[in-house]
Image 1 (cartoon, rainbow, N blue to C red):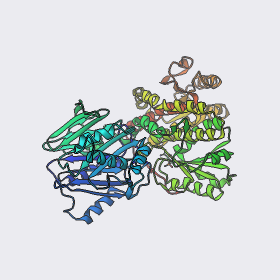
Image 2: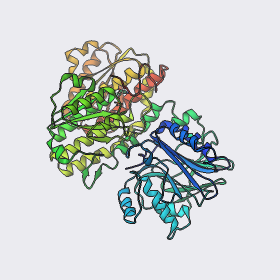
Image 3: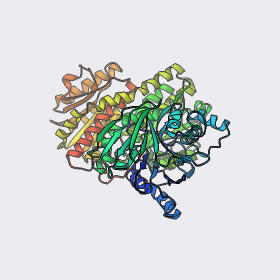
Image 4: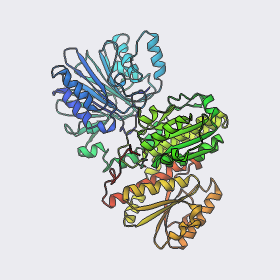
Length: 631
Ligand code: AGP
């Protein structure tokens, strides 16, 4: 399917286009190198030589693979002062050469690079095939190359590349950044955007387009941000902007005052801080396209409704934050499907000799898709004939490759070792699995499934609201930086959130932290409470499970009476808990099962701020790796 999934803040797939006085290949490769962290499943370039030739090279794997191919091609093959390039973070369509960008039409006169997903591409693909066009890739991007070539070759926009691009953009649904070149038009490049970032760099006798200023910041700091449904034509002398109808449009000039390193982090000090900000889009992109014709659909499902109906037990196996995402989802999946759900640490799973058979669904959750413990758990489950569904953020990784089915999260590359946007995306994806099983089993009517999905779709906006109020949490983090230990309490879905909050603090600030089910306090942990000890409490909604709310309020009064410093994450307007909160952090009111998506965010910010204040590297905590490929 899609070339690469978009993220509004544009941290997925790197795109760069250039028209100017320099050799385009050098400028484009330089831009791609600065954006490689965003996607490295494949890379490609297209150069216009000015004599009517368009030369394209693309290669799966890291940028170095492409550079080796270019080396082999020899210095003379890619001469020209206009060109573009792409580094891909594959989501759909395996990361192989034929799915790499740029994509071309049959005659090789048009080249297109793309960031995003074109949701109506199947119909467009069918239209092209019916017209006798042979498509050579699995991507949605390729359809745009053929459509633009056909619009340019004949009809009302014949010979006019900007008009041809606009005509095609008007037919596309979904979100996309497209950059287009045509062999007949060596002096210009056309780019279009909808809900996916595109910036223009304005130099002296040279102009750039890119998904991120990092691509051209060494050449110019004068930039222009394009708006929704806009098309820009760049030449060496500058740029013009229209809307999709061709009417002149205003775009927003700005001066880039970041250095190169900050540009790669979107102006943040650390990737993790940028990735916390990207969580609304990570959620939106994970959900996008999974509810059509009134039904929840999974990716590459390869599990029929009958397979899902046969399921009589669910295991979720994972490690770390991914494990916590399973603990969160357990409540929803059991509630929706009425099936027993066990969540097991992958490193324990196969040694406990679990009871598995063909009717067991094992959900293996992994951001990297390479975690050795989880991979071995998958292998054990399949040996026991259980069906395995991978929830993964990395297309083509080992765990999805060895699973029966896969549901990709679309959080984009997560550079920070501490999982943030991937964790929220994993919860959303686990919920999609639960809804798909409930839908197949009929334990949820279709209108109920639709309602639950609609509530999930409202979560990106709720997380956005949390992010707009976290300055209070940062101040609290700076104030807590000298704490020796922090406890985290929660009940129901708040309990795994407490575990995740403790994990973040351990791995980022190297501080002792522990998460508890609040009901366990009286069975031992309350002995830990002493004067001034910070205790973070994740409150349920007073409007949800009122009994849980009441019990947690009494837990808070117990620990406050023993001197704890209570930091309460509560639904905005929860006046009952206010008297018991030394610090009250309010989050938007959302349905009970979705609360982890908003209550986790302050805990991520808190841990990051404590680590920053302690002077630690938030992106690369000591002793840790982003993917633990050893058992
Ligand atoms: C969480 O912040 C850590 N980065 C770690 O616990 C991680 O979640 C765990 O190692 C699992 O990684 P995976 O999702 O790539 O399998």
